[in-house]
Amino acid sequence: MIGKDNEQLGIMSSAKALEMAEEADLDLVLIAPQGNPPVCRIMDYGKYRFEQSKREKEARKNQKQAELKEIQMSLNIDTNDFNTKLNHAIKFLNNGDKVRIKIRFRRVRELSHMNLCEDLMRRFLDAVAEYGSADKPAKLEGKNYMTVVSPKAAQTSKKSKKNADNAQQQNKED
Image (cartoon, rainbow, N blue to C red; front, top):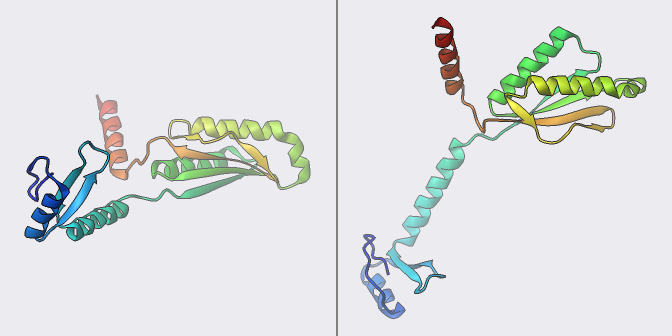
């Protein structure tokens, strides 16, 4: 039995514990029913539930939902376009979002060049390897060859990125 101020009251019958709770105008709550003997606590259950829901609400407010961003490329992409798409993917991964990388085949005859498509996807995944990794191997779905990349760090904030950039700049100066 635990009292209202978290003091140990010892082992007692449930009738006596209920009587003590009614005297204090509080509730008797079973905390650990699997214990031997079971552990009960005297508390204001309504207040406890309110505080618990408030903590859960605050936790939900502070967490960020990871969005799924998409990068589309064609099979014959130029180097500068590839680098632009790569920089966008890195920015998305640094913000903690997942990125779907999609290589689309505009014509049916492009499907015969799967080796070029796989090379392009491998090159892209190698370039973003330090920021994220593919959840599953890339696969062909209709006229699209795609995979999803998840960020390596669960959530890299912009502040920690700035700190890393500042540290890199100081290393260059030294």
